[in-house]
Amino acid sequence: MGLWDRFKDSAQQMQGQLMAKKNELKSGAFRDASMAMCALVAAADGSIDPSERQRVAQLIATNDVLQNFPPEDLHRRFEENVNKLTADFALGKVGVMQEIGKAKKKPTEAWAVVQIGIVIGGADGHFDENERAVVKEACFALDIPPAQFDL
Image (tube, rainbow, N blue to C red; front, top):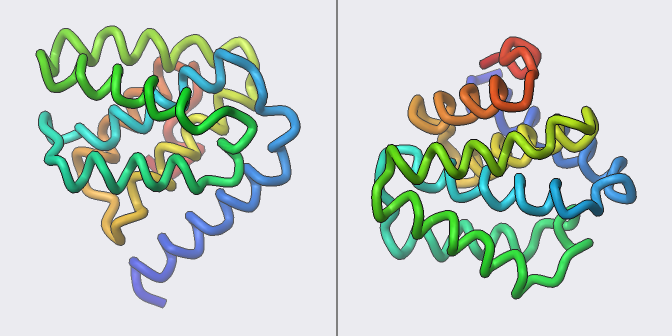
């Protein structure tokens, strides 16, 4: 089995795990951390082009786990985080990591935020080194050993 096939299987498995916990993932901290994670992964290389921004927004809108929240609210929060990152990536990243860190009080939510980052990162068929690096940093913000996600 090729690397991409293994990754695709892993992403599908993570989505299944997220669905199994959907009813536990309804807090504002999870919502905010998830949108911060999506923005961070989308801008992982320090910039985000309009097509990538639109693609991630579409993924957010169609993700079954995130349907616990109004789509327009998710979109607004995602855009706010992207705007922070595109205005000044280094400074914006500090604020976005703080948002992500809010989910660490509930281990189920913290794990789910990391899984969402991996699913979003791999949605284009390639989970690149920049995306892996920011998800790994998010693991530290959530007090989760990155090795638990093979990062």
